Image (cartoon, helix red, strand yellow):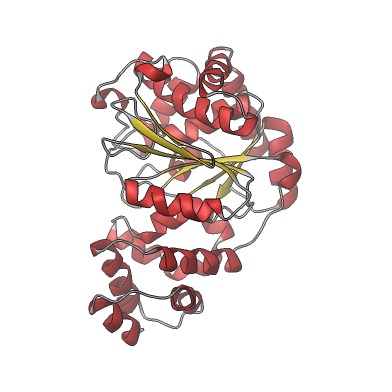
Length: 330
């Protein structure tokens, strides 16, 4: 690792094979915590290259516990995080609304690192069971239209990194990797990213697959459709910039989509929205993000997807999906 750190400190980059080897060696416990921390810190100070990202991705997918959910044609809604915007759990709520619209979801998520209220924190607080058991996950989709893939259960090789990430409490390249390493390899995916350069890297990687995707970056920095300004959406066939009004939704104030400061507060916001008791602003953001997911999976217009998202939330279908999933956890 010393040679790698010296190389990176001299403003050099890693080849795909070098990047892959480093992560494989981390998984084998070959490096001490100080070296791993130094390695992560270097990537906080400069952008990751395509070669490095490909190598890291290949290593994690090679090491992960894979789960075959191809019979269900699922979609994942997962952002990189790290945008420092402190929103409520938009992608996770949108996942349940998407499931309520009869689009199957395999939601990859984790505990928060740079915040205390990641997807897994809130769902665990609300009584959702995490499992990597194939039969349980398939039953989850069949009963509720959604299953939760809690990252640590599928990427046990990265257990050496988890406490270091938690101690750092900062965005690392693992935030970038999260949406790329869903262990069920979904054919459909919505990914929110925190800058345009990363959107380009994701687009290049996804173009090499048969994945049906949409990459989101709100131009004021959010890794989701925030409706606080224009948003760039990149799919396999086109790139577009949408205004809130262009989606037939209202432009929002950033404070109106803030999240809770504690897991308990975040969970309360989560359940209020899911029970159709959210504010107009909160609902609009969910309609936009779930609408894009639905439109991507069903190959319909985003406007039609938004209408299906509205129906799923207002008819309590999204809340029913959550309750059915929770019942399986009991």
